Image 1 (tube, rainbow, N blue to C red):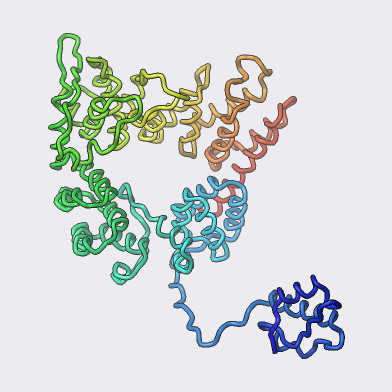
Image 2: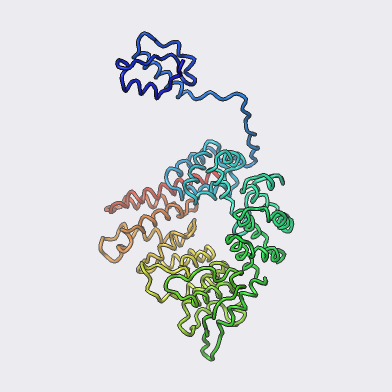
Length: 533
């Protein structure tokens, strides 16, 4: 007896059972036990009934195999589950905006909550599609979520990619015992090593060093970043050895950590290379005398300098000058020149090398996260003199928004508010606003609402209509940033104010829809924060 499947029945129906009869004497799968009810005297009825049985069997599910062992259940979670209403709001955010979803998940994780089990598959799927969601999703997985992620390779990559202690920030303790170090996933091993690093920095470094040779290149790079937590001069010898690793990402990670140790041999070597190229001279009007390097020795390449080709339009020597200056601890310049950062960046630079010198300082300010130097460089108003295609900047010159990201939150918000208060709002100012983290302080929030009010209430074509950006992509980006970052829990009700603004007569399209959408997002955030506080 031949067991027939659904495709066999479709083929028979396509040809026609009148032309080519198909005796249905057996069915495949779970429907096999019901084949005896078919009418063998009526071929057409038999085929249709068989199709119905196979369809019902498929929809009903599948028969599990016998003798298959079940996986170990997930460990019990100690973190509280999100309240039911907060979970509903999270689902609405997931359908509306991934950036908003990331914000709410981050807030939930910071408050110590984990995502409810029914939401875990959808959150993991979302993080598979959008890498930017992975840290936020990883923060609310809990033990059950990480257990679930281990059963699918793409979900496991989400869990692994969620733990990145690049800046030494604490990460969740993903494992309870040393077995995680021997047999756990990458995320569990990073979590265990980070937790150990927090308790005993030397023991964590020794554990990493003991198995260093047996780790893969990718794992070495990820695990080495854990040493950023509690970094000290005791780590220098191990990091110096890592500069000779055969893998570029490992060498780069070691270089970044050594650069954070101002007294390290790496920093002394970097200073020795750069200081002769930039000297303070002249009185009473001092000048920075700069000169191009004559080349780089193999030791500089080992220290990670000169490994990248120069950006287009910049000579190799000028790019080397930028790299050499960028490697020096910024405090070194203040100590050598006896000036503060604002005074140093205001000095003229000889030989038309000022842009390359400032590029090095900008790179250093971003890498070393120096708010004093970032503020000084932003205030100096320096600009790259080259004519750049499409207004882009070469990698040698970090943009203003990258420097602004180094500023303390209050200073960063104050800078953005000042930029937006000018007569002409530039795309650069709007870019800094979109990147400025929320919730925005009241002064910045008021400026943003005033901008929206000006767009809505000012006659088209007049100077106050912000015509240079109101109809462009910046209008949508401003609206998205306002929805996520206008305060949702302070004394002023921004949602109500924007709903009222949407009702002014006339409110030009598409602003009524946009303003109501912003107000709705603010109200959703307020309700979520009230649930988790």
